[in-house]
Every structure is written in structure tokens, then in C-alpha cells.
Length: 167
Image 1 (tube, rainbow, N blue to C red):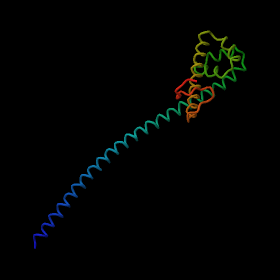
Image 2 (cartoon, rainbow, N blue to C red):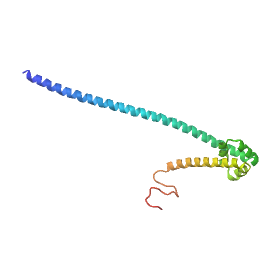
Image 3 (tube, rainbow, N blue to C red):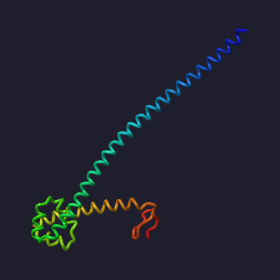
Image 4 (cartoon, rainbow, N blue to C red):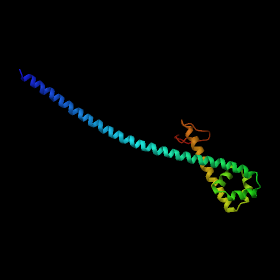
């Protein structure tokens, strides 16, 4: 009579042992997953921090550009009311980047006489910087507008590059 309970006990013990082995394997697997996910989370956290710093830097750069544009606009208004030779003297004393912003804000009929009153190299330098600033500003504006287009639609006169045939 005692043989049956001993065999039953061995069967239950074997079942419990295999269950424990399976549970330990699952715990080990879950611990590995937790370690991997923790590592991925730390990496994502570091990337997020780096992106936050980049956003802060870009905001700062944008604030400087907005300030330069506003200052250039204000300077352009003042210079436009001055005699061209006096305005040229003021432009010549300004940092080249600031002078370029002011010239870029002026209409050609206003900036022309002022630039003519400057030495050729100074006028050329200011015009080159103004052209660079204008390209950067128009590039930023067109990138903003292009990003807003979406849905495969095109503004009038823009060719859809996704089409298989030319218009």
C-alpha cells in the first residue's frame, strides 16, 4: 500500500521540479529583457537629453537671428532717412553682418546710393553677406513651407517628382 503513495509523491515531485526549472528559466529570460529594456531606456533618455540641448541651442540661434532681422530693419529705417554719404559712414562702422542685415532690409533704390558712397570692397563685402543672409532666410522659409505642403499636392508651377513621366 505504501508503494502507490511513494510513486505518486515522486510523480508530484518530478512535476514540481520541472515547473520550478521552467519558472526559473522564465525569470532569467524576464530579467534579461528588463536589463535590455533598461539599457534601451537609458540610451533613449540620453538621446532625449541631447535633443533637448539641441532644441535649446536652435532656439537661441533663432532668437539671435530674429533680433538681427529686427535690428537690421530698425537700422534700415534710420539709414534710409539719412544722407547717403552719412549713412555710408554709419554702415562702414557697423559689424559687417549687421550692415548686411540693414542693407537686405532696404529697397535697391535706397541702398544703392548708400553702397555707392562706400569703398568698393566694403560695399561688395556687405552685399555678399546680405545675399548669404537672404538665401539662408529664404531657404528656411521655403523649407518651412515645403514641410507644410504634404499629401503629394503641389503648389502651382511645381513639378511632382514622384510622377513617372515628365509634364
